[in-house]
Structures are given as C-alpha cells and as structure tokens.
Image 1 (tube, rainbow, N blue to C red):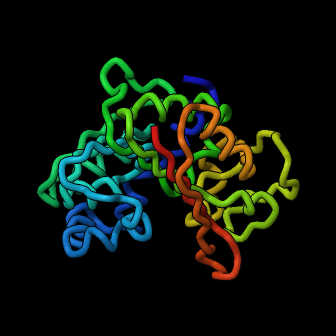
Image 2 (cartoon, rainbow, N blue to C red):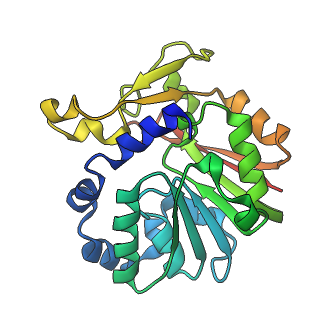
Image 3 (cartoon, helix red, strand yellow):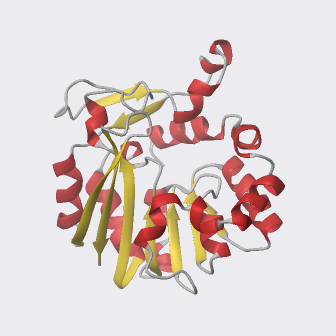
Length: 250
C-alpha cells in the first residue's frame, strides 16, 4: 500500500460509521429505503445494467454499500472493494437488515487478489467520484480489465473533468488549469459537513485529476473496447456538466 493510499484510508475511516448513520440513516432505516425502491436508489446507473439477476458485480470503492445493497436486492452477487473498515461495518449491517448478502473486501484496490477475483466478474461498477484517488490511471484500468470475464462490462461513472477548472460541485477541488498533471492536497468529500474545528482535524487526501482524453485513452490503452461515453449535468446547476459515465467491454 502506497503512502498516499494509507493517507486516504485514514481519511475515509474518520468518523465514517457515525457519518453514514447521521446522513444516510441507521442501517435499519437505510435498508428500509433500499427495499422500497432499489432501482431508484441506483439513480441513473440503473440504465447501464441489462440485467441484475445472478450477475457478479465488483463495486469498486463501494463505500457504505449505497449501490451494492440495491444491486443485491435486485438479484446481483455483489463484491465491494473499499479501503474503509467503517464503511464495511455500515454496509454489512445494512445488507443484513435488508435480508441480502454482499461480499465486502477491505483492501487497497491496486492489491485486489487477482488469483481469486481475476476474470471473475460480469460487471465492474464504480460511481461517486473515485478516479482522482489513483495516481496511475493506466495501472488502475489494468486491474479493472483483469477483474472482468471476457465480454464483461465496466461501468465507470465519475466527476466530470470540467471540475478541474470550476468548482461546480462545490468540493473545493478546482485547480484552474485543465491540463495540469500535478497532485493536489485536498479534503475528503465529506469534510464540508463538519464544523470547522473538527473539519480541520480530518486527514487530507492527495488527488490526481484527469482530463477527458486521459480517461478515455487509458480505457482504450488498457484493453477495453469503448462502447459509450455519457455526460450528466451537475446537481448544483443542470446547465453545467458535473459527472460522466464510460461504458467499456473486455
């Protein structure tokens, strides 16, 4: 595990279980909401799945299980890969309350056990903004490619590179130079929800923000066949891009 990954782990384990209880509800409350309408809980990502029943899904940096559990309710066999023990605790308690099972592997994404999980999954799925945590995008994409069966699909949804030049999502991560390749130090995504004194004590993360061409070319270079690229409006301003989704196949 790299030093920056260790730092990210500290950030994402900081008060994480308590944060999810406060902002997403107790595991029992969250499970009830997931069960009521799992497709709605998947938001726009539901349109990228041809089917759910029986497919094996790798949910990369799956956090507290917010998408893994709806997928499991719909019939998918889901394995979450995430750094945070606290995320794991919340996700497993929520899955149990929902009456479904998920596999949760607390690990460095770059060190996933490919002897066990290589060419294992029908779908590799990630959302919520994770690419900036990985400083070598090609190395990351090669791991994603290795996880998939032949014919498997990667659904990669992330923050739009437009956020490099404007803080449209209000995370405070704007660089100002779209083509910058520098690493930046910044707060983890949830820091803005804390009072200033506590916020200052949350471990920082080290980000590498990519351009559209860097992302698409990495997908192609690492062996995927690019099938689709969609852009989605920002939740703060529907006239501006906030997220994108890449669909690619092995």
